[in-house]
Structure formats: structure tokens, C-alpha cells
Image (cartoon, rainbow, N blue to C red; front, side, top):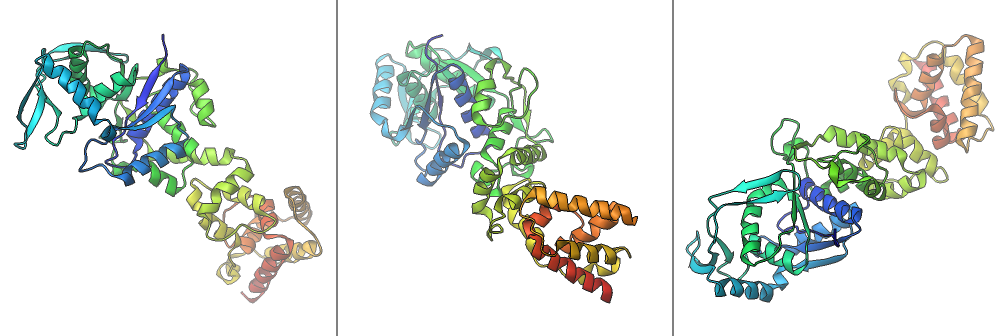
Length: 430
């Protein structure tokens, strides 16, 4: 195999969504697998619908996902002279004619020498087509049609492989006829299976599908989204489903494992995968990524321990403000004081005394302290739940949360002592 040249060719008429993002990813992985080149081409010939805003969203989203390109971006709107030259070649061969398009405007049509034939798809084998009608190659405003511009650009850019969704199969039939009319070799085609919702219907917003920019704003990690998109139509030979980074995925990726069957987009599965990626991030890196989402700063001097406490229940980075408030906001002990077991008086009194003059600046110190409390409770015949649950309520006002030792570290010994003291006083008044 000679040099592989793949391309991603989005249209800036909308934001980057899961289907297009998967196409970009698979082209990226394919080019990296073969040590080839990846070209970015902006197909902006739809002047009415294309916008700079959408193009910038595409570029920002691709950059956020970590997908980089060896060439481009090229813009079709800047390549008009090339399309006119190739159209002239077809006209010289008697393969074009002018006629009114569907809206009554004059356009240049491709006169098909053949209306049926076959092409090879690497996932489907031989694909037959028939009854293809003449189609526009130069529109009334002088801009090229999608199918014509794609063929001209792929030839001029030396594209060897075209990887895209199965919805393009009908376009491929038209395009191979253009390749043949130009006496050009066709690239190899790979048409990926459709992405469907859990109900088996076309993926849409009701299934949780949204733009890559929206996933970013919601607090998904780019490596988690890339990881998930890679599983929509590809399987690892050993069944692996988690890849820590795009680089690791690229090392493991094998195009022979691509499939043509539809893939199911399951938002719950994506959320679960995102949570696992969050748990695997180093604390300092997670702290950095949380900063844009936080309304209030992490506890000074205890930032990394706070991050460790937050990550236990976090599925999205955007959940961090709520989780932080649940750890650090003031507690009203009168809400739960009447529900505490009788032994909580003794638990509170002992813990307050044990915290006097103590520093809990590390998790090891805090775990040692909790171990001491457990030993004391066991000697007093107090159940573990009757020890830890009242303390959790006193510290956070909640029934569930991070490991107890982490709570002591995040709050600090003095703040923890004051909260337990207020809970003890509320219990005595209840």
C-alpha cells in the first residue's frame, strides 16, 4: 500500500454532532494506523446555509477532541477555478448540458454515460446501483454541487480512502460515475453503519444526542467522548472498551475490526464511561479541568483532597458545583437531630474531644483518626453505622457521600469540630 491519504470533509451548515465526530475520528485513526496523512476540507459551497460560526464550532470541537490534521483546512469556496476547469473537461467530452434545475434556474448537468454499475465498499463488498439520473455539477450561482466538488477535490488532493456514513452510499454511486468519466482511479470506500438510538430509530435529540460543543459544556471529557464514539462501529480484538487517551486508542485501533451493522448510541453508557474516565484522571489534572465549571473555589490548601472527594460521585464535570456545595455548605442540624440514635450524644461528645488540638491535613492522618473512632466505638459497644452515620449528618447534613476520612480532610479539624458541636447541641434540644 502506498501513502494513505484520508480526509474529513464537514459542511459548516450546523454544529459537529456524534455521527460526523465519529467519521472524523475514524478517518484520524485510519490515517494514523497506516502512517498516512489526514486532510481537513470544509465543504462550504452551500452559501445560503454555511456560516463562519458553524465553521469555527467545527474547528473548536475537533481541536477539543484532540483530532489534528496534516493538511488544511481547505475551503471549497476558495477553489472555484479548479471546479470550472474540470467541468470544462467534461463539457469537451460531451458529458454536460445546460438545463433548468428543480427551481427553474439554469444549471450545468452531468450527462451520465452509464446509469448503472457497481463499486466496492471495504465493509460491504460489491455494491450495485442503477437508475441514476443526470445531476447538477455547477449550480446556477456558479458554485459546484456537493458530489462534483467532492470528486474534484479528492482527485486533486490525492485522497486514497473515503470513510463516511452509510447514508452516503447513494452519493458514492454518482461520484464513481464522475471518477470514471474523468478516467480517474476511485479511492477505496468505507461506509460506516448508521448510529441509532436505543429504540432502533435514527439518532436524535430525544435520545440524548447533541453537538460536541454541548457535550463539552455539559462536562464530558474529550477522551471519554472519543472512547465512546470509537465503539460505535468498531470492536477491539480482545473486547476492550476503555482507552485512557486518544493516543492509546490509536495504538490499539485496527481497521479490520470495523463493522457495517448499525451502532446503538446509549447516553447512559456514555455517562458511565465518562464517570470512569473522571475517576482515572490524576487529581491535579482533574482540578485543572474543574475550574471552568466551579462557582466557588476549592477549599484553600485542601484542593486536591476536595477533588478526590468530589470525583467519587461525579459523572460530569458540571456536577462539581453541586457536589462541592454538598460538602462545604452550612448544615442545619435541627433537620435531622430528632432522628439520631441515643448513642449519638456520646459519639458527638467523644469526637469533639478527640478533635481538640488535632490537625487533619492529610488523608492518612484522617484515616488514622477514623480508625481510632472505630476502635473506641467497638470498645463502647456502638455499631459502626451508629458511629459514622451521625457524624456524616453532622458534617454534611446528608445520608451519603465521600469516605468519612475525606470529609475530615476537606473540612479541616476545626470546622469539623464546630459542625459536630452544633449537631450535639441540636440533639440535646430535640
